[in-house]
Length: 310
Image 1 (tube, helix red, strand yellow):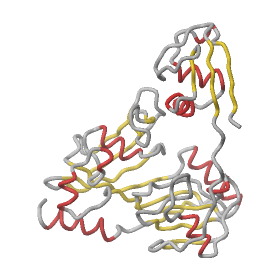
Image 2: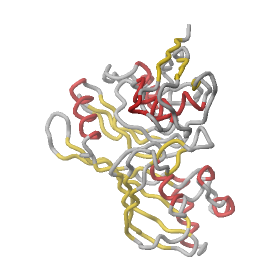
Image 3: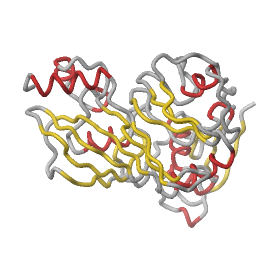
């Protein structure tokens, strides 16, 4: 059974946006409040209002909390092309192929890193939700590269802390359209859910602080190869920030890339790869780095760009 809650708007929230008022009044996260409004689960004095509407003191906010989704099961399944880079008592490091999710989620029926590890006989940390035990960070399904998974409970706690405190060096290479100016720089812009598209993210005023540092490695007539370091770790952060500065990742049609260029380079996904991950090993404390070479499709696209002067 779904749960209904209703509370009056106190004077202290007079004039607040509906999503902000919901978050403060009911203790939701801002993103959860937005999701509830957009899904039609919120009424203001009996009427559905947009998330940006302003609430009035004394008005009533009614919220219907839908039933939680059924738990997603981890299905052991061999993952073609997933390579074990490092394995010890605390962590397992994998080179994740494109088309593979980090863990199961509602609506995803494809292969996962967790399922692949289970099929290979790896036991991971039991910390975290059942479907994402051991997962301390994620890569998009359409992004390949280096990922670390906690095997011990101590490692899970240590790695989560390092990611939270921004002590992990996360390095990506991205082929982007055009030529960023300046050639080295920082994109500091908040990211939140796209106001019109549920499955996209965007630079929005009420988003979470997000910082991306980039440096140009190679410049070609139609595109530039960048080295990117993430200070924060928002969903689709690199893709959103590069699109926001009008240099989307080549092949990233979701965020405005030119399909013609991707076709000329033989790409069927965004050119984005997690090349290196540096962190303190959970047990020894020693700084440790793991690397992933470009997969064949990205290397071939880069070779075409280089030799055919695209």
